[in-house]
Each structure stands twice: as C-alpha cells, then as structure tokens.
Image (cartoon, rainbow, N blue to C red; front, top):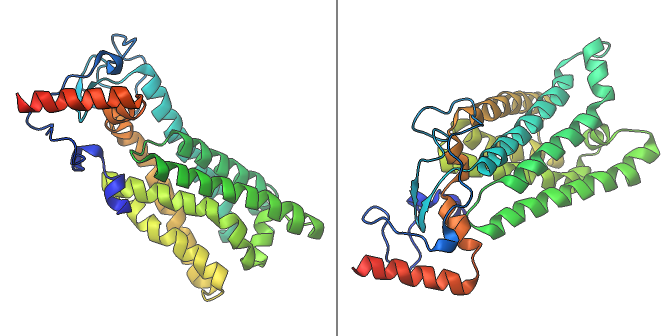
Length: 288
C-alpha cells in the first residue's frame, strides 16, 4: 500500500469519484488554481536540466491530473534546497564514516573523530531540511517521516545529555559502544530509509533501492549484536558509496521531477468547497 501511495501521480489511478483521464482530455483549472505571478524565462537552472525538460522554460505548461501547471521560481528554489539538504546529509555521513577506515594515529582520522558529533548534527539538519521540502502526494506519509526525524533528534539529544556526556564521551562513540542506544537515535535513520525508498520507487534509482535494505540492515545488525565487525564495515562502505551516488545523481534530474504533479498539491491546498466545485467541473468536461 505504501508503495502505491508514493508513486508519482501520473501513474496512480484517479480516485473513484473522478472519472477524468489525463490521457484523454486536458482539464482546465478554476481561476483559484491558476499559477500566479509567472515570470518569463528561467533565472535559476539546475545541473542536468536539458532543453525541453525540468526548468527548460517557465512558460512550459504541464498537464496535471487536476489541470495545467508551470514551474515557478519558488519551485526551483525549493527543489534546489531539497537537493542541497540531501548533499549535506550525504557529505556529513561519508566524512564521519570515513573515520572507521582510518587507523588510530592518522591525523585526518583523529580530526574526524573529534568533530564526529558535529558532522552527525549537520547531516541530521540536512536530512530535516529535505524532509520539510520533499514532495509526497499523501500528506500523512510525509508527516510520519518528519515525526520519525524529530523523534530521532530528540532521542539523540537526550542520549547525549543523559548518557554520553556523564561518561565524557561523544554521542556517536557512545552509540557505537552501547548498541541499545540505537533505539533512541534510530528513528532519524528510519526517516532517511523512508526518503530513499520513496526516491527509489518513484524514479527507479537502483542505489536508492539498495540503500533501503542496507541502512536498516546495518543498524539492526549493530543493535542486535548479531553482526560481526567485518560485515558492518562492508555494509558501511556500501552505504557510503551508494549515498554519494544517490546525492550526486539528484542533480541530473530535471527540476520538474522533484516537483511531481504540482496540480495535486494545489488541489489539496484548496478549501473543501472549491475542491468539490473543481471535481464537478472536471466531471462535466469528461461527460462532454
């Protein structure tokens, strides 16, 4: 069920009360849904956008389930911030995790270990930004991922103040030495797993699909104590490589892909009366 709910709207069946098929007709939005303040030309462009796709032209009109929509400057900024959050999370994680592969006494490794909690905090902040800006059609799923992130942040702060600090240890070091602490910091990584699952499902990204299993596999292996250090190191290395690829490839996608079907979000923001009026209008157009 979750997989169906996360699919892009263009491949999800319409609700039973709507008989409109986007492939057969082009619905017209009510005036309240029409994009406002559209400016000619695109002042912002993301790497990987090609002519005719993504941000190609803000005068380009896309046919959504509930009507036509266009890419605005605000949409571009939102998508770039979303991707920047993912890059921050990936870069922080890779930098922090690299300490596991550097020997004691190595200058770079020692520097990373001393700042590893700051890297953890930066990564969590980047993930939080992306979860605020992520486009998911089903709002409760988005709120659930955000709640997991918040629970993990509160658990991390609580674990540090109540357990790690009295022992004069950092949070990450404490979690490594006390696997049971994963119960408190784990929800943040559960939120990350949900995000990469959504990305893998919607866009068919292999690295995201593999991460969906690697992340919980490694964390549960550490929590249970059933996984040896060698296996942990292998999974950690795989996580680092795939997370880097995942974040980098986000900038190869057209901007419009991360927006999704904007007409759905515009429709969801309408009052109930206007929603019903629009649905009735679309049904009349279909009958005609």
